[in-house]
Image (cartoon, rainbow, N blue to C red; front, top):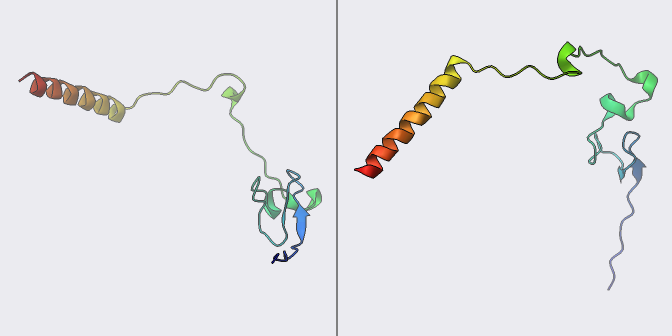
Length: 88
């Protein structure tokens, strides 16, 4: 006996073009919702985002803090202690 499929209404995401079941609050494919792209362009309130000057070049090199150095020292000392125990 064949089951009858219940036809559900679908809609198309204006952001990515995928179809999905109507009534969802966000597109399951791209995550777009009324605040990020479902609304008409004139209804969306765009906020400016400050992009750092280095964005087009290279990002700044990460700096190690005292906490990072102490963690590295702890790892080295733990390794030396393990070698000492294994050599015993």
